[in-house]
Image 1 (cartoon, rainbow, N blue to C red):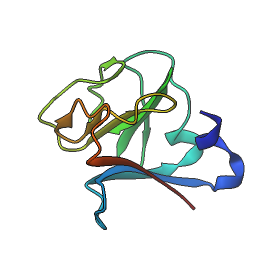
Image 2 (image 1 turned 180 degrees about the horizontal axis):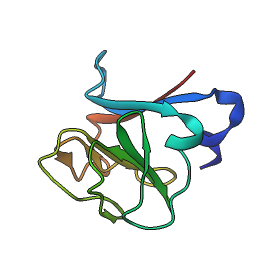
Image 3 (image 1 turned 90 degrees about the horizontal axis):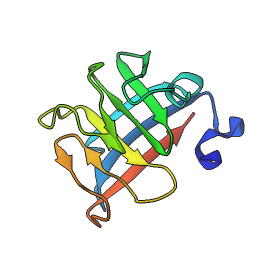
Image 4 (image 1 turned 45 degrees about the vertical axis):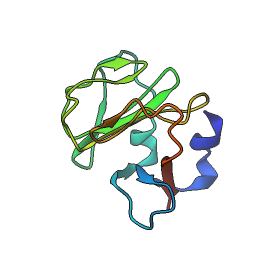
Length: 116
């Protein structure tokens, strides 16, 4: 988790997912790092920032365009919602990129984090 939190990385973070080897990000959201990566205390809590709801609970980070979040390890709420990303920080690569779910070790998807 410390790898994504370092203050030297910048004040803003863009978090998302893309298909491997793609130059386009499939789904992403951007916010102040201090809010987007702030720890949450429950499996349904999120911090509203820049039009989306960000969370970092236990070993999971992600965002949703709605406050409907259900962290059962990763966000399983609204399977048809294309505007969600949910992935593990220190274990499996990821879980969700929009409607693509169960991506635990799927080699076709990768996490995206950019700092500014």
